[in-house]
Length: 487
Image (tube, rainbow, N blue to C red; front, side, top):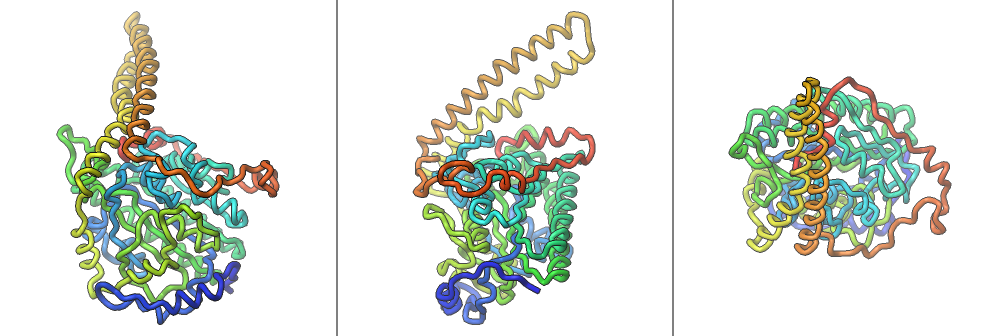
């Protein structure tokens, strides 16, 4: 039997159910047909992330019954969105998704990880753990960025699962999928425990960087992620059937991809402001909201993800969020429509997106180049040279190997210092182009053990488990910890 733990105030429920918004295309959103039941706080929320995945490619290659993308579209509401006017690098974009604010606030401008933005602008993990520590929070990823974010800020996620193993990003994603399924099915052993899970897939972005967003490899990666998500959604259905609990499911991508590789066969993929790069999507299947299944939102944004998750658990909103709860904001509810052909409706929305104004385009291009220079040097320019020198060192050639070892040390020292300098310069340039210039209105979360904190530090730490399963010998985890320049 469904256990309800938090309920929105009656006035808020009644007001939202009585809302009468007009639809821009298709049938009206149908708010009058909804009941207060779907506005009750969720028991389980699952956030599915896929990196660098263009919605038009999903519609072309994975809009079928074998794909979790299609299953989720049929179950919930889908929006073609754009992040034009904001950076299209992965770490800035995921930071927006996981904090609820744009880059002019969180100030993340490259893929070089720093903890400071997530202490100033707490992540969804921090906010859930501070306000509702009884919710079991989990992150499952083969990419270090998310295990880092989930560990930062004084209130880490309960279960931080850094997946290792697999020789390709597709194999890594398969391992993430199996761990996610196991965690979902495990909720049936404790139906009274609320859960939030974030599960991340990387292979589409890797295919885009290596072959371009218009390649067969990119197509195959989109199909693979759709198949993985189908397995995950089937596990959710099994858990719902076993317990009667309901799951809210949100799916999102951080940015899109250029269609063709660059001159030398490698594609930076994204980082600038072309419509293919700023392309994104949001899919929301809200627990209990069957009346809007198969709908299209004209208003969702990626910055709405964190407020939506917090609203589901009855957690108060920050006053300085840029996003809003997608299930409760009246303007967003009024923007839900039911086109006769959802695929065509989404395609039309995608085709309507363009470049930002020329000034914004130039500003963000400068920021991308300056912000990514240090990371490019450290992650792309130096490693091939260092690896070549290592092959000479490993051969133990008289005198030559010693010289190679000395050259390697110099490159690491000088190159590392140069990368740090370039990164610092990039942050300065980013600030003067508008990144991180808006301070928070809300006070920071009090740290455990501080005068403002009234909980038990011992209990807090005891409840948090950090796990890195040993899933085979592979060099891929090292690769995944060094994310592409713009991915």
